[in-house]
Image (cartoon, rainbow, N blue to C red; front, top):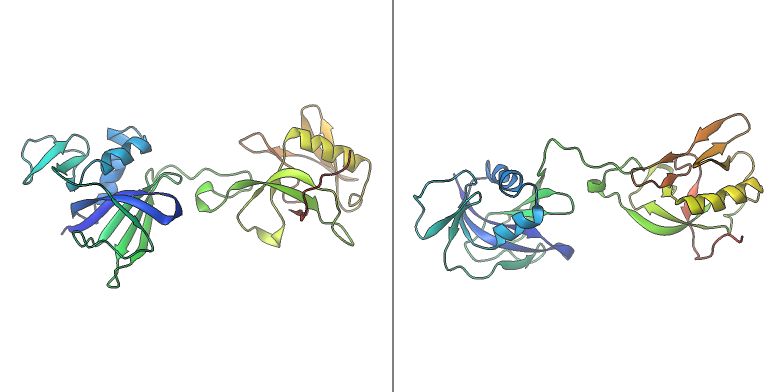
Length: 265
């Protein structure tokens, strides 16, 4: 059984652009969108979005090659049966009432940043209710950030000033960094640094300025790399996929600084 639906793309601020899809079988629509993305447009999500928004659709059928069409539809090879003489795409918001046009029961939206199809169902109160999400490539794991989180699960890097928490109060020393925006255990900031900032931290830690000293390790440059050095142990600082240094993300108690100052030279 098929149900009227909308198909399109999610924009910023929960707004979307979508087209009518008159025959949308819930058990195959996501599969059809995956095929259109991978086979027809060779994983070009921008081109996939544009093709879907060019027309209203009788049905999606990326494998259709025959000339027999439904009503006034015409074949768009690799996509489906498009309808002639349709108006502009529907512009809506997930928080607005559902469209009266065709009384859609489902909505399938491409989400480009996460490379997912987001599925919504219309409620009796004419609101969109999130139903499910599906990766366009179900076999490809989400990219992992250096913090151990996934880019598609709310983890993002953003610029920040960080400082070390040291007894009895936080130090005034702060450094330019990028911190992960997702929550992490113990509430400490997960920070990454450029080599230049790491050199600053190494200099200050070698001078034993507070809050360094037991039990915090010192940072030491070793050629092109850096080590965290305790009295009886040395640990090589890891780099993430972007080449940034994860200086003690699991060892040093970084926190977001409440000011914009930097450590004096």
